[in-house]
Image 1: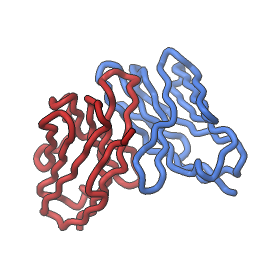
Image 2: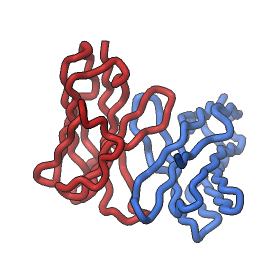
Image 3: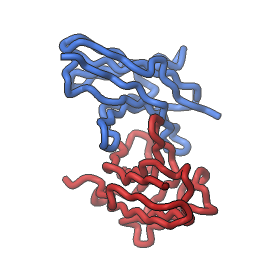
Image 4: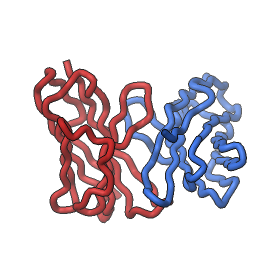
Length: 115
Length: 112
């Protein structure tokens, strides 16, 4: 079974530029998550989708971050304009449903460096 | 706010020894707990989980213990191998929101 796919793996941009990350979840997984992981810390949830609807985006900095999952399958996370503190790994994850106990599987992450 | 934390940020063990990684959680309403392993440059990898109606669960070479009285979670790795070297995260969630909250992680180093 294919895992969660993410691209690009690495990106370096200057502050105030924009960047977009793409995620394709495990086939059939209805729930998709975007996490931000700053070096040395645990992942922090940015946004959670159930199919193409947003379940939780309370920790998404909406002035600069946006995410969509228009057809309920793959998803895009955008940052515009980027700040130095956005340097982090952006992890996409998916699970089969919203029940506690449905294993959440992570992708390899997209590493962002803002200079 | 509620958080999940770890007692020991680093742990160094000899190959073949047993490892114990500890985690304290503060949200008494959490009812599902997971341990993830994260190797350098990779995403978190699911190891084992446990629901709040259990106090112990065993997998292959790993055991998770849950003590709800003191809100403590531990991961035991038997016969630790060099390939076990990684950062280990505990995470918690509640049935009401299904949102995972991660701790800061423990770096496990296995010396050959």
